[in-house]
Image (tube, rainbow, N blue to C red; front, side, top):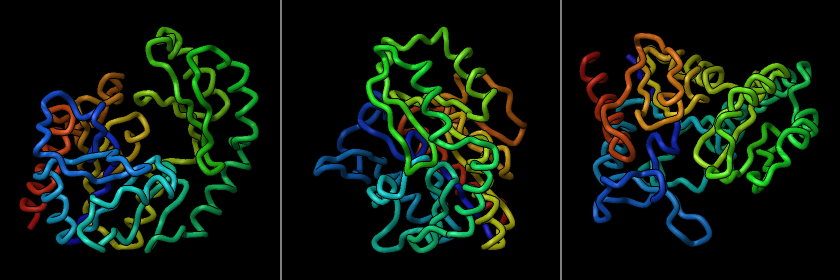
Length: 271
């Protein structure tokens, strides 16, 4: 039986000092990402060990909104030079195979975005129209696929979130608020679609997926078992999910450990 473990990274398996929670013990942390010479993201020693062990028993598929350059900074999620053969980046717009984008996949996604007019050039005037407020600190494009804003959470008008979500959904863009980042994603770009492509390529029989945000829900719905971090945006939004999606009991970096332990259990049950 071929198992596929498709997991989001940030605030699911790996955590910054800000997002890991007060329960984290400094001596138990293992650095998994360095940025501009400084430690950026961490796992617990137990979580890192479990992930390294799991990678020897199944196909581990990182699934992230990170661009390729951002993803390549995260090296501690695999052991030595044993990087995952496949990785889904840019929220599903790009699939890496042995570190290189699969052209046929990205070409397919690009054609869909163009035909639906959900391209960055069409979005930017709407961003300028609705988000000229003082709480927008920076506007970033992710390799031409989607846009995210770096915001001041204290000044962000949370009461307007539903209005903004509806406004952009009407023109084919989903919105997701994750920490200090507000994402705008074309409806054609999904983590689930990219995961299904990899699943077919490797002939996987069973998929466990993990995540924390609204952008992860389609991935979890498409899996045989979905694992949702209790601290995340998806749980806070209270959107109904299918019965095969479980929410962790723990939060923060300990939820990452719980997710990996649950994956280990699932493998043992199906052997």
